[in-house]
Figure 1 (cartoon, rainbow, N blue to C red):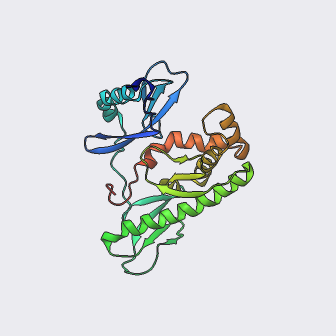
Figure 2 (cartoon, rainbow, N blue to C red):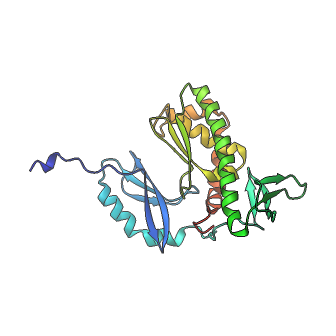
Figure 3 (spheres, rainbow, N blue to C red):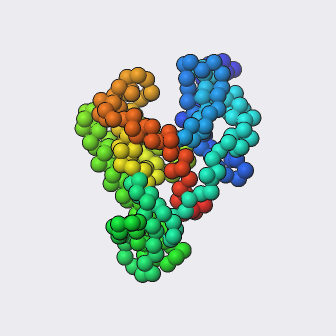
Length: 249
């Protein structure tokens, strides 16, 4: 009784599907211009586009019908990149060779060699990936907190808190309450890329959408926004290949 008064479930901002045993995040986008469901694969990861007023159940069914299409096209550049000794990790866009120190104590340190800087990681071999991952997150949080505060001051908004996530298809997300989630992998990109994502997410505290007004807000605080945006489009998939320990890394 009165079932006609019940509202259809609102589409989520993202959904995780299983592709051959591999969890993949698919961003969900609602478009006024879309006439039908569309699944695309930009550099930032899979995107499911929905027309306005479409039912989420229909969209989810569409996604499941096209899971094989998606699995065949996902980048298997694809071997996951691991945070382990002998690997070159692009800290702030600059390749660094990961080297185990052999010492059980200490902290991760940068050795600024001319040819190839090193990230010297202490701990037993099996613990080094986690040590490096935790250190990278600390560096990412420091950089993202500083740039977020900078853009928040320019736009006259307040960032409540910042957290790091390991999303496989998103670089960041912002809530209307002022909380921002960032992808830890941004510390691997050049600083101007991290700055762009920080400006993008902080701008959502002014415009919670991707309208022309939103992009104007991003450009107001970061006039050179297209540089970071273009870099992510060109190199985002390679950056997403880096996995935290326990997720293939």
